Image 1 (cartoon, rainbow, N blue to C red):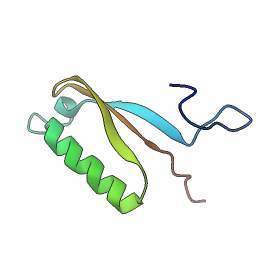
Image 2: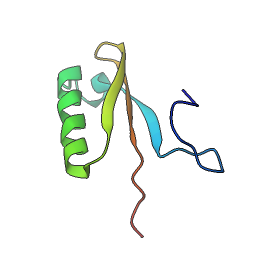
Image 3: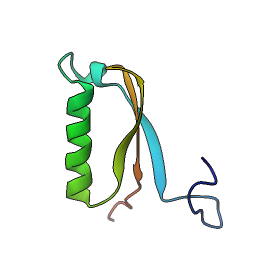
Length: 72
């Protein structure tokens, strides 16, 4: 994974991953709703955001995407 994307001189890439637990948001917040939210965010931000892995259905997903620098 570390060699899959380009890195700068400090070994940083412009991508990151995070775990998301749909069931901790709400009992009715499903994997399908999480997917819809990810697509909406990616569309608005015009950057990469994908669900990379469903670890445990409804309990943990891994999202991966492009880091967007915060504005000062």
